[in-house]
Image 1 (cartoon, rainbow, N blue to C red):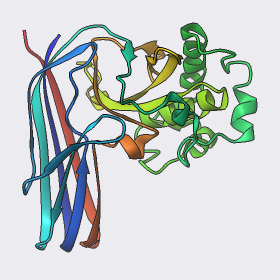
Image 2 (tube, rainbow, N blue to C red; image 1 turned 90 degrees about the vertical axis):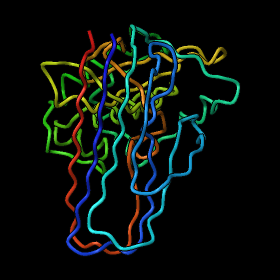
Image 3 (cartoon, rainbow, N blue to C red; image 1 turned 60 degrees about the horizontal axis):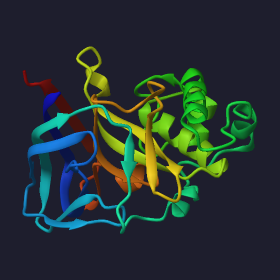
Amino acid sequence: MHLKIRHRTEYRYETPVRYSIQELRLTPPTTAGQQIDKWKIGTPIKASNSIDTFGNACSVFAQETPYTSMMIEAEGEVHTQDAHEFIDDAKAVSPYYLLQQTNLTEPTDEMLEYFSYSIPKKNSVDQVLKLAEAVQGLIAYSPGQTNFATTAAQSFVMKSGVCQDHAHIMLGLCRASNIPARYVSGYFFAEDSPNLASHAWIDFCSDLEKGIWTSVDVTHACLSDSRHIRLAIGRDYYSAAPVKGVRSGGGGEELSATISIQQIV
């Protein structure tokens, strides 16, 4: 597919923000399954660009003059095709590092017991997909019940969440099964489900020696395909978040994020 994507993030504050730093992972890589035709990011001031530990394109900018609103826009065009296998380059983070749990992924004893019959005995696609089906079956997709700080354990207790929560639970269970797994942030094209445009899923390491990762969309209990556009990878949401930052001042915050994905014929 040939897709046009526009992602706008707008912040408004009750009182002036005195100082802030924003970190963006809003540039999709050219990789298996996607070719970036054009892409640009608009920020209030010039950002510095780098490549982070996981190989993600990262932009950072600091604002030192007071403001009460801020807009960040990313837009471009991507050609996609079905792909679910991704091979690390020589500089990639060791898969063994991605066996470590984080606060967002740490499973409880109750979680491990509940999913004991679905937990993979080895890093095979069939077994990991079976686990994804079990997670999807338990955690009802329910926007507004959780947020970026909700842990896998909390979502498990609530039995509800969104793609981010599905991914965190899946990461925790894979890692507990000694299967390296990483968080993937990105976009998902579905004309009938615009609320899924901002999406998250996981990669698990299906071949440790060759550094091959297989991409599984837990929310849809399927392998990734031409509907998925990858943005960034990390240990969890926080290390792969498209937009995150810290600020001094501002009081209450109102955040508005809109994403549109259109197919170009």
